[in-house]
Image 1 (cartoon, rainbow, N blue to C red):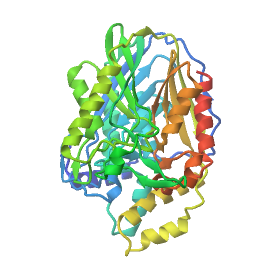
Image 2 (image 1 turned 180 degrees about the vertical axis):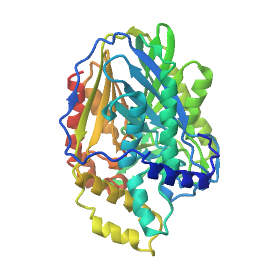
Image 3 (image 1 turned 135 degrees about the vertical axis):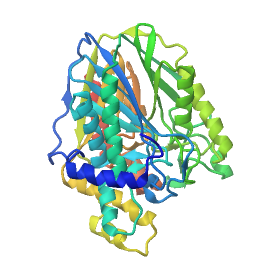
Image 4 (image 1 turned 90 degrees about the vertical axis):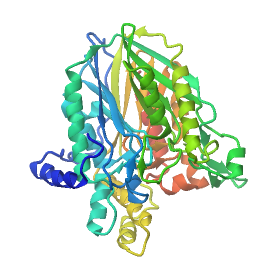
Length: 473
């Protein structure tokens, strides 16, 4: 899609698409089904098709939910990149977007569109976001709530979203015409130095004393230790013989160097991915944000333009180093598993009170737009629409696709519970819940807990889901 696509044309086309029924309908409101586990299959004639399409918002479009400066220009385009794996049951689709988030019915509609194009079912499609902030924060349900107010910035414009879906369908349809045999898989990892640090600084009373964000100019934020992180960048690569087709990279950290200036950018993680693609133009590179909900670059990032360049180089070094010792192994087994969760709602949030705040025109935009996401999630859970976790297992490699802004502990737990496997975690899937802290994090407070729409019991539900998907691998 052209990044300079006319904004008025988006709105006009939106009405036509909705009238024609092009936008996928919402699914039936059902209770979450039991987890779906498929035994590993002999891959047989396994094939792989890569795709990419532009998801850059037009001039004037909202960024990060409408409470920061809207698009005034594009420094570098936003992309959706992915692959379709064929030949082992129904096709499997994995996709990652340079967006802040994709939530609730927007996430489901995106998966439905890609599933239709690939000839598969929605449960065999994983769509994750990298979580850059000068990017769209797409929740159609929240958009409808703010539209009803008549005076609030858009969350995500329907026409733009519909065009992205159509472009995605076309990209996959074209990709399937040029699929390649895939015969081998390889995995590697490398330490990334001086990027990630834990955002939650704990005081003597055991509570969060300070939030170390994605950038900081406070000396104490730079001086204090990194805290609990996962320093390793992991890579999973697919091959056709000796030819590397796809390399997926996984690292847990908020991916913002600076934002809020209206300049669209894939930021330092997206820029590092793009540089790697220039180095290897015959390989499709994907970058996934791991469980980085409580991880940011604020220890090492002062928010300057120079810092973005430095962070980009550090991520690029991690990607390159993770690929140095890749040893392709013949693919012997492939399995896709899902696990559905109907999340427990956080009782702190009351829908009627939230709607009163949204309708109060004396409140700031952020205090009205942000609660629309909360209301959207409350209504979604009350309607019985679950979160879907999924995992792709190839030989002794397991790739987990998790929802929202999970804390780093979930990633470390997954690695611990399946220590005999190579575990790569991609969080920021269905972003409906916003943050997913651990249960013990709630009484400690802090920003993440204040915007966690799930109750502390979500810890057990998510951990059990992860364990379930790994137990049969």
